[in-house]
Image 1 (tube, rainbow, N blue to C red):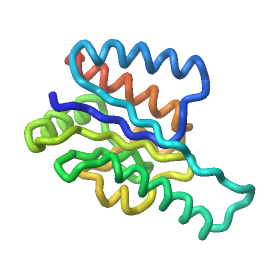
Image 2: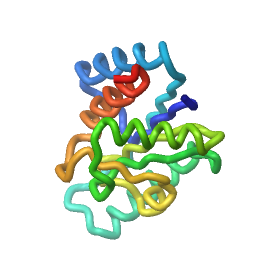
Image 3: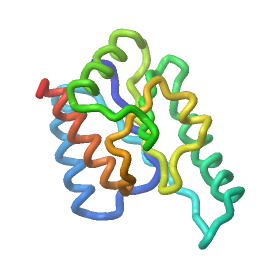
Image 4: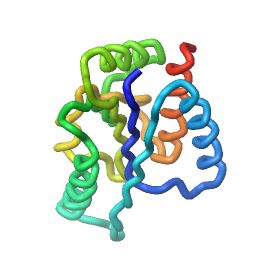
Length: 153
């Protein structure tokens, strides 16, 4: 499998999430190359206007796009993405591995979501649910899926 990158906005602050992610990463790295790129999230004022929200998402989006190469296959996690199961995600990753010379890049936005430029750059839009989850929890859930896929489960 190609190199895997996870580009995520925000740091994992909770120790239990960090430990779980490290355990998954340890297992994944036995079978695949994976890099985690954590980008700082922008400060969000109380009761921001839509213009402020769009500006924050644009700044975060520009930072995300700096870590994506033209040859990468990009899977963006967004609520309006394709609902799927583990087997379908495996198929998406296997197809991506065959069709790109670059990395398979997963993108998790900040608490306000992803900028439209990032969503448009995505080759595949993935949704784990129509519900909203904290991005820290999404990272744990994604790492588990990647681990299972790399181990053929």
